[in-house]
Image (cartoon, rainbow, N blue to C red):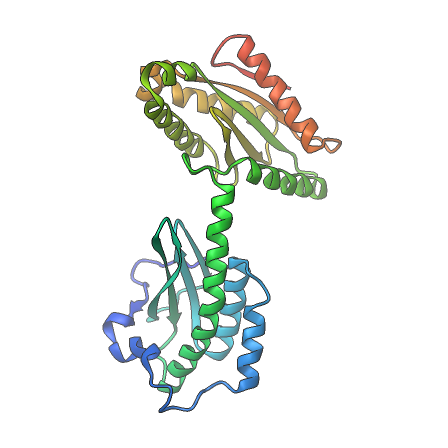
Length: 311
């Protein structure tokens, strides 16, 4: 996947604002113009768009198809907290942004935006072709977006926004498969907040939730983009560290502990974190790997507070 990068002075002009005729590509009276796509072409595109419900794969297929038929240099789909970009920016490019509604979340409609970037202004027949292809793609895109939203709800912790235990199991399985294939090891951290129970008991669950949310934020900021953080429930968290050994595991754990020790919210409530760590070996199962890290955490908790133990 090529990531769309917009360089200073090279940002595509938004022709949906600058050139109304181009922005009105989707407002054609289809009864007054014959279709650009034949029935067989329409059926072929529909089959390709219905082959997958995975957003990234669907967007990639769409961009490949579009770049063959039109001077499209990139597309970008923005939704929720995510965006997918394919292609590249060229000088004097023209962009077109189309909004798309899909599904509802707690009664509120969900919105996405699809941005097209072209190397030149499209001719009327090309705009008509784009409107027809977009209409086909939009059907599949709505289903894929709704599927992503529902799956995200099933794999995200609603309080902290971190991935949950279910997602951890899937991510761990994938990392183990990659490690066995590439011989590249990875690390597992299991973390537990010290003195968290007294926050709930003395100050209430609202303050307890505030501590959990802030800890999740600090945890995420302490990791690399390639690493993953999870909340298992209560005050127990896990991290998967890609391409990491025991020394790297300890550096990350110490960084997390130092960040918490310097944060006013955690010092106010006297909250710290104990960490158990291990690295993956090729004879490990998911159960043996997690049990080893969990035992290291148990040793850290029972040896004092704010400690790191490796196994």
